[in-house]
Image 1 (cartoon, rainbow, N blue to C red):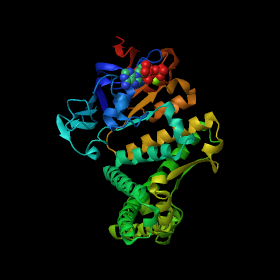
Image 2 (image 1 turned 120 degrees about the vertical axis):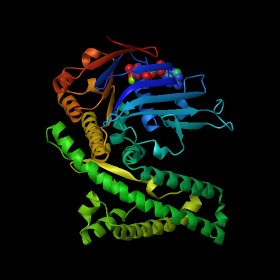
Image 3 (image 1 turned 30 degrees about the vertical axis):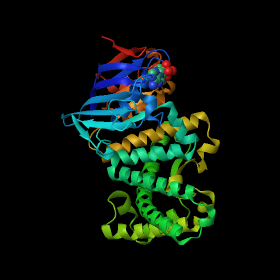
Image 4 (image 1 turned 90 degrees about the vertical axis):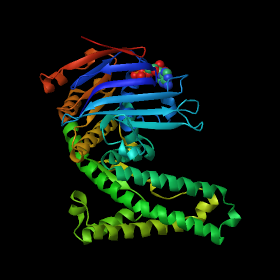
Amino acid sequence: MFIRSIHLQNFRNYGRLDLDVGPSVNIFYGNNAQGKTNLVEGIYVASSITSHRTSKDSDLIKFGENEYKASLDLTDDDNSNIQLSACYYNERSGLSKNNRPGRMLVIDNAAVDKISDYIGLCNIVIFAPEDLNIVKNAPAYRRKFLNTLISKISPSYFNLLSNYSRLLAQKNAFLKNIRTTDGLSGSVNEQLDFWDFSLADLSADIILKRYRFTKLISGIAYEHHKDISGGKENLSIEYSTIFGIVGALETFLNKNSKYDVFMHKGLSEADYGRIKGILSDLVLAKLKSVRNYDIDKHISSTGIHRDDILIKLDDLVMKNFASQGQQRTAALALKLSELEIIRMFVSSTPILILDDVFSELDKTRRISLVSAMKNAQIFITCTDKNMIGDEIDMIRGDAKTEFYCVSGGEIRKES
Ligand SMILES: Nc1ncnc2c1ncn2[C@@H]1O[C@H](COP(=O)(O)OP(=O)(O)OP(=O)(O)O)[C@@H](O)[C@H]1O
Ligand SMILES: [Mg+2]
């Protein structure tokens, strides 16, 4: 799949932008603070709705305005065309019906209600300086990486997550308002039973997907990491969730010789039902065991909302000891795995965005990246176009690289 044109309205420092782009490599250069990251953020938001650098949609609206719109005209691998538009408005916007902020998603002029019908239509992988957070920062960054990847492939996973977040928010609001003296009353327990039962049921489905994808990422990232780093260290990724869950899942798969089926084809309905039952019982037992504590502290202290993935180099967790260079290599290996997994599951070729990272990489890493994306459309931002090097021409051969100068929220294509 490739983008033919990008349209932004009141998005960050762009008042209005209508830009045709090439199907191969597009390089955006310019001084600091001119709008390079804003442009690629606009592309990413139009495809994936969330931004790679803020979770606040209102940050994306141009200062002083009330709504933004980001649209892409795309051509798929089978030559069909599609247009995607994501719009977000604040409470002052004319689009707001009840003085509340909101979102509008449009596919080919038809509004869509469900986010899960929209994401996944155009898959973009972005590699930006913020990605180092996946390796070195808090678990939330790693959960976001995993959740984003699985959601792109499986809209049902996105729906599971949304349902889980909604129920957890309701349960937390309830916990916040409980007076500790109510702790043991029957009605409080009954209410919490309802939430815990529903959360445990959703947790089991989410755990099964997270476990499977973590294993997949681990195998693929291990290979990429070996290629990039010259094979000196071993990268692995492990799923870390509520104590005892991974053990129970692996015991079930190994005892029934179902590991390969689970990883590659998916379990039969009967086996899925059995393992889901085992996992949801374990989650429920865990939630009940911390109930008094949670009532006392007014929080949900345990659950898959606290999950993590452990990124290890030779069995040591990287976040605690890795150097900048090791972190950068691991982050690149993770991004290359993301690309490869999307390719495995989705029929159209994903698009790659490299925000401010290409010129930072050495020759080996640049070659790894460009080779992994041989036929795909790539967007690269940098401050100096002469820093790009000749790896792209080397690998892409005749494919035309286009250059664009970005200055003060305007873009001029070089002819
Ligand atoms: N909501 C907004 N409305 C208007 N301007 C904004 C908004 N958000 C950010 N900006 C401004 O957009 C400008 C360009 O930001 P951007 O991050 O795209 O720069 P850049 O070209 O990527 O620079 P660098 O080379 O430093 O990465 C900045 O001056 C920033 O303050
Ligand atoms: Mg930038």
